[in-house]
Image 1 (cartoon, rainbow, N blue to C red):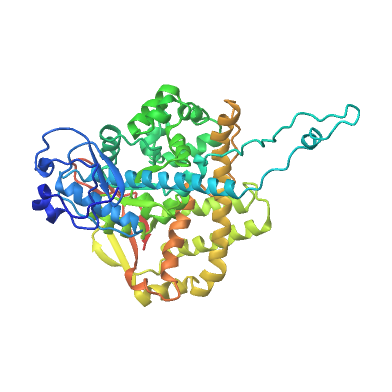
Image 2: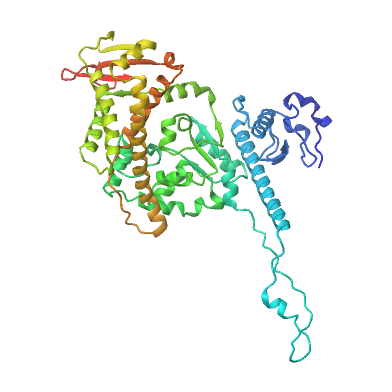
Length: 522
């Protein structure tokens, strides 16, 4: 049906909200004149068509919603970025989700149609299959009787038309990542209650949000406590992850859920919500997560988040600068630095199994780096400026920072030729062990139903230590790029302070038994 690019007269006064050719009205779309009134008079669903994309909208859209959806569809059709702003209370979240999901659904239908057409073309070119051998014999006269068998036509069996594989179609379709700082619950609620779209989703969260183990969930360092418990085969929830994944709540008609739903279900079936959410990520069409999961390359690597060929929606974008600055920064105190050193030393001395000398040598290189940083932090020769009575600080920037790093034998050449190769080996080795352990926790239960899942002892850096190593290498990559474009964006700060005692309304005072605590930051 031919599209009308001229607005109907009933919408002429709202032409400022709808800019051609981004928003196209087609004949099947029925929109009353009062659709753009500030108050929604009914809750009747609307079917809109924008640039040939059908959008099933649950309400009568506000002008801001119309404009936002039109811009989103236009950006997606042209593979462009879009920076959109909408007034508070204008229904931005609903417009975002409906437009993105409608565009993806439209792409899915086009892929299915293209696959079917390709199948028909292939069938048309296919040669007629050879006749079976006994077919020819049926037309030969039998010499003994002087007669022929009845004349017959050979009808070869019709070629089978295979439907396009849903797996292949979904693999080609872009996934949608929705990142937000504080509005994830609201976004999921909009999708769950106010739309007819039911994509497969997952919500990526931390163990702080998803852990339900009665002891681990109350600790301050849930990541390490969880890993330790898995090593000792002491967690009763992780091996039951399959009970969550097989639950009807996550099947076709109930695929939209939030963190609260997952935690409730985990407690009900005694399964691990954290690992269930991670497993659901593999087949999810829409992924909700805090947007530092999208911005921070260290977190992306740890959670196997691949943004290539994906649609990325970042809500609350006014916080992006702070989030990006935080993702590009790094800080570590002397206690944490010492813990990483202890782990590295334990691995090198044979506390864990390592297969090759190449891996051992890589760990030694990383150990030398952390020894150097440890010596720098605790050096008595460091000079500080007084910040207040219990804190001292020193800051280096630009070329002074680079010279200080060179004094620690962290140079361009050392970083490129020694540190980077060692880092890749250590990181890949830790990643391999981590995935092996997670697969033993989840996949064995899924495939065999055996509740006794064998957990291998960790043979590499812990998750926390690995994130520290990755974070400092991320900063060094920015500093030692060939063009040095980012050097002036960084400051290196060394701070020492005395821990204060007292809490609440009590006046805090220096602990007479305390010592200086050190922190290094970039």
